Length: 193
Image 1 (tube, rainbow, N blue to C red):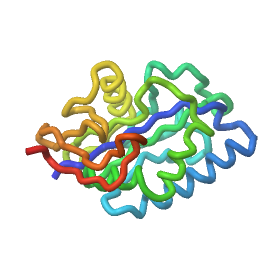
Image 2 (tube, one colour; image 1 turned 135 degrees about the horizontal axis):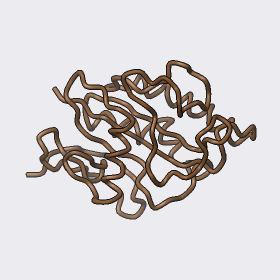
Image 3 (cartoon, rainbow, N blue to C red; image 1 turned 90 degrees about the vertical axis):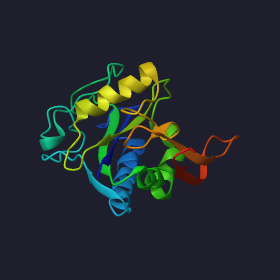
Image 4 (cartoon, one colour; image 1 turned 180 degrees about the vertical axis):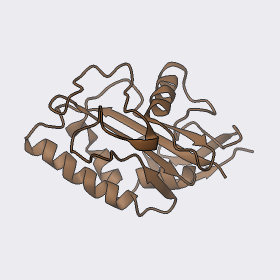
C-alpha cells in the first residue's frame, strides 16, 4: 500500500539562532505541533536529525532521509547562526490523515500565525507525493517535487492538497474549501466521478 510523503518549506523572517522572543515562540509552538502531529491517525514518521542540535539543518545526519537540501530560491544563510528556514519531511498512510493534521489542532493555529514568523513569497510552501510502502523519501525528493509544483503546477507525481491525486494518478477532489476565505472547512477527499 502506498504512503503519502509530505514536504514543507518556508523562509523565516529571522535566523533560527535569533534570540528574540518571536524565534523562541516559533520553537515552542513547533515542538508542541510535532508532539501533537506524531499522535495523529495516519502519521508514520518524519525526518529527524540524529544530532538533534537546534537549528542545525545543513550538514546534520538525517540517516535514510538523505542530505538536507533546499529549493533554489532559498537565498539566506546555511550555518547554524544564519539559517532562516523551516522544513519538514514526513510520511502518512494517506491524503486525508495528512490533510487533517495540517488543517486542524495546533498546526492550524500555527498556520493562522505563519506570517508572524515566515516571509510572504510567491513560492509554494508544501508538496505531496506517493511512495511505495517501505520507501523513505529524501530531502532531495521533496525539493525536486516542490520545484516542479513551482514551475509546472500539480501533477500525479508532485501535488498540493487543492489539486491532489490518488496513488494511481487519478485526480482526487477536496470538497469543502470556503470560497471567501480559501480556508478548508469540512473536507471530503474523494475521487471525482
